[in-house]
Length: 385
Image (cartoon, rainbow, N blue to C red):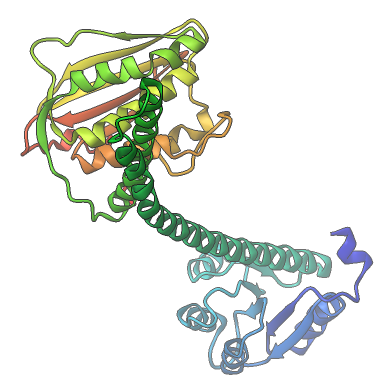
């Protein structure tokens, strides 16, 4: 503000003044002329024409004018795509609150009564023009960021696809070498490790491509009935070393009644629960316990993964959003997002429960019948992409 007042020769923008009273025009012109380029229209029809030509940052609009009054001019400006985003301040001698409400309902940004202190008129114009310009710049930057994100995702997807060809060839090399009869057991062990690592990398690429298909709704689900407990026990065994490094214990509570059969895809469930349990381990306090509990509801079975520590309040509402992470070194914010995608694709649900102080729980619900559809879970589902 001080910079503007100390450098009056620097114009801040273009204001269109619509008024038929010479005295009022003179007062406003004297107040704004040093800071804005001022265009003047004494009739509503002319104002519409000037505004539609573009380049207007703000319109100061009188209400009472011969022919088309200010309210009608405002209505037409807001109906025209070329002018609907230009801010409007009504200037009027009317002091009825109903008149002000009419103007604001039509889309005006402010209401100044005549006569008004010229300094007040100037300051209100500066505030609105500055706000409008900042909003436009933020909208443009947001658009550019969205475009950059689309380009990034396309490049990643193409890169993943192009990696599969060379990797398949690399995986084939250990298979060929293992057919030789002059290898030592140590050499065979190394080749088998290379082959296993290659297949693991290929599986990671396939999973990332599947995530893209799940995002755009083109993934073809191949559901089957299986025992989810077996997968969770395998994950717990695979993560035992990671948990031990932090002194964390994984405690799997026994299911309450019968097998833990669900309907879904094993190839989706393993990475989904692996990421969630690994997140729970990493978020836990040292020497604490990660618990895995079961429950059954109408049409589905739920797995509750609980760890010590709380999710920051600022990201709880966006916990399953893409790229959301907090306080995790090298975190991408894709683990919980991919878990949500996997649950949704399998016609299940996933939810964050932060109701217990000092604890965080993630609850995944999967159907145990192919015809599963329970409106009660709709509140758990993340908003559609």
